[in-house]
Length: 477
Ligand code: SF4
Image (tube, rainbow, N blue to C red; front, side, top):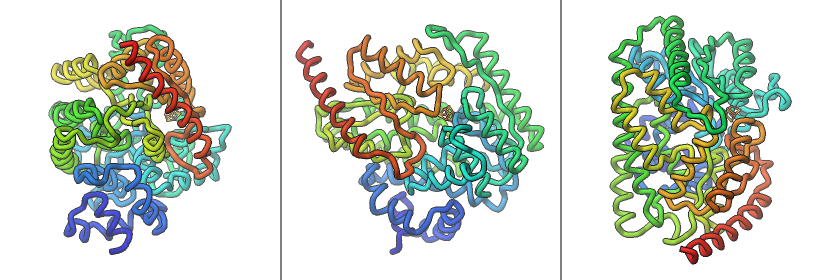
């Protein structure tokens, strides 16, 4: 058995399935610049250390993402046209109707997948970033690694000229320049739906004018995709996408969050992000694998919770990553565990009771796809909502999931994430009284020059503070 077989096994492939898929895997990895040594690193070190691979459901979920990563580089023979969005993107329900309108169109969010799988599993994200930097993406122009990955994928020819690229980059500082570079590089056609960004500090993100504006803009994006791809997106396609979203919520999102309320939690923050995110992504390889993986995972989690088993011992203080946990550096999660705090959650994908009810109300009552998406994004997205609303959501998460500390990822290249991070950390410390830190860490890649020991020292001190604060709060009742 070589490292490729090992990789397929760790990603939940059955022996026959693995044999059949292996040539596609090798072809895809080769094109994606993943070497044999990178695969060895993934199977010997990265995957076993950072994800709960003793769970078959979890292995299969990683398999869903591996398939998506390979698909970027190896489309099916039928896929002749490409439609992409880029991260931050408007969600599965935006691209899925396009796939339904014509299954021979590849739909994907390649910069995200290249980070979520390429950087996280194989630590190759820096290769895409360096290619982008060689071709004009200097640090003073574009700081964000994700934007560099997206340009790098084009520069390297991994992603060819895209027939329709419809992201919503108005929220992203670096996106306009990346779009321009990509368009100049290979002629990719890009359309940018707009969204009101500057909502006042305590503004209502559901204000009708904001929702209508964003919804209309999303609809314009679909019109553009229809024109460029020569397709018609019918009401039936849109309804089917909404139905799938509701099914994913009911069968995957809601039950998993319920399991995570157990002490100890049965999954870590890496596991949780990979298990929850198919709901937000357009999976070009489909959702059958996801539903099957969740079915198995939920049975396994039920047993774990019933037996009181988890990633860490019961009573371990639990911390949450604010917004996005740094999946480019997934080793941070086991590092927290070594230091005696449990890194279980990722705020960006947590919904407290108030938000869960609101989300189901929006999805069940949806009469218009674009309004529904605009409402959901106003509710869950960190971008384009008000600081006060974000604070209230975090307050609910802290209460509902009994969170003892917050690691509010600082991401210096991004004005939006960095600004929110610092302000919210201060608000949470002052108003709720749980400890927060804002470490400077690259969410999307690990270049190998990351100061791991400095991070360990910082987390060590933070872990001590969280433990003491938990004791104090329980003494105070
Ligand atoms: S982190 Fe900030 S700069 Fe980077 S893609 Fe997201 S919004 Fe854009």
